[in-house]
Each structure stands twice: as C-alpha cells, then as structure tokens.
Image 1 (cartoon, rainbow, N blue to C red):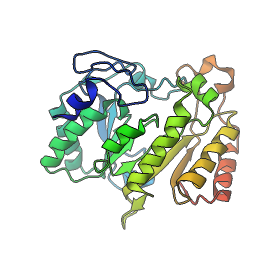
Image 2 (cartoon, helix red, strand yellow; image 1 turned 135 degrees about the vertical axis):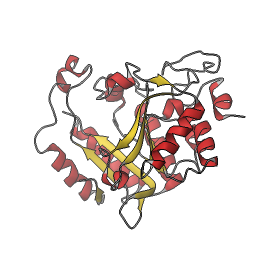
Image 3 (cartoon, rainbow, N blue to C red; image 1 turned 120 degrees about the vertical axis):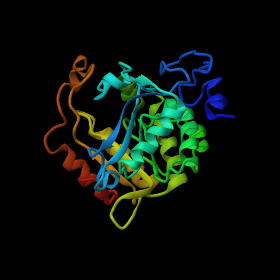
Length: 283
C-alpha cells in the first residue's frame, strides 16, 4: 500500500488532524489533496554552510503549509499556493535530476503536509538509485507519531523553532499548540538522527539542525528556546539563530512586528547560547 493511501484517507499527518479524505479530493487546513504540489526545484546556495557544500542543496519547495505565519517570508508559496501539481513519479524524477545536477542532498522545504506523497516518491527514487541524504526542512509543527514513521527515510532534520510561548504562537502562527508539538517533534527528530554529523568536507550527512528566527520584542522567548535546546536536546546541537527577520506578508498589521530586531540583539542571543553550552552556532 502506498503511504499516501495509508495516511491520507483520514488525514492526521500533522497536528491539525483535519481527518479529511484527501485521496477523495477533500482538503483540510493545508488546502491540498493527495497530489504533490511544488513551487520550484533547484540547486540552492542560500542554505546553511553544511547543507550547500560547493555544489548546492537540491532544494524542492513544496506549496502551501500547515501554519499561518503572519510574517511569512515566502507567503506566495505557503499562503498563495503558488506552484504546480505533479505526479509522484515526477517528484521522484525531480529528486534524481537534482542528484545528477550535483546536489549535496535532497532538501524538502515545507514537507509536513505532503510527507506521505514524498515517501511514495522516495521509494521510487531509491529503487532507481538515489543515494543522497534527505533533508526534512520543516516549520516545526509536526506530529511526533507521524515523524516516527519517517525513521530510516530521513537523514537530516532541519526544523524551525519559532515560538516557546503559546500566546505568541497563537497570535503569529495560528495555533497555541505550536510550542508543545514543536518541542515534542524536535525531541523525536533528535532521537532518530542525533547530533549533526559532517563528512571530511564539512558537509552534513546525518543529524539535527535547528533554526530559530529571532523576532522583534521577543528576546525572552528566544532565550527560552535556546535553553530548551541546550538542556533537553543536546549542547552539541547545530543551531542557526537567524537575524534576517523583516516585516512581510501581514506583519505590518501588528505594530510590534513592523521593525527588525534591535541592533546587537542577535549577537546577544549568540552569547546567551554559548553561556548555555551550545557551541555549534551557524555563522
């Protein structure tokens, strides 16, 4: 039985648990049925250094999302649903094409709501010789029980950790349950793959890489996330505390989101992370 048939008849692949029959064409929160939909597929040099190496990350941008981030930097893809429907076979061929083009890995961007179709495609691609590591590059709102089904298929997990405070999560990403599921998901990801492992070239082969986008006026929340990673995941976690926030999408409707983080805020968070014992900080 295909993964899509198994998991999308009564969809619970993410914490939304919409329970719609996507095989029959019903659509839940993500607004997609059981057909893969992608916005782009290309070699990408804009990821963290351990992912891009010299040749680039073989990045597949999946359309739509299971979050509603008011500040989304890619809202045309995640909210506007830009992209095109493709078959599972075409998705497998896209992975193989990126490998031939020299990709260091296959980087699945926003895969959560399309994971069953991705697994179907991966089965085909592996059978046809795909050797590259798979990167699960998610917004971090993942269902831990479904993540357990991915064990052995995903080599590198790269989740966002957006918010620790449920009130902030409800206000900015559309669900106050985000922190609870996010922490549980990161624990499960680390259980599966451990700390990030690099080859002799410094390119990632397996493990966990955490991203946190620092927000304006949310330094306390950022520190809580950093403490969680250090105390409950591993001080050897590779973490990218990102400072590229800018007001986008609906952010201008929220006065506190109209500015970038204060000057020096990212450096202060890096210092705090080091004090917590984290020593693998993305530069």
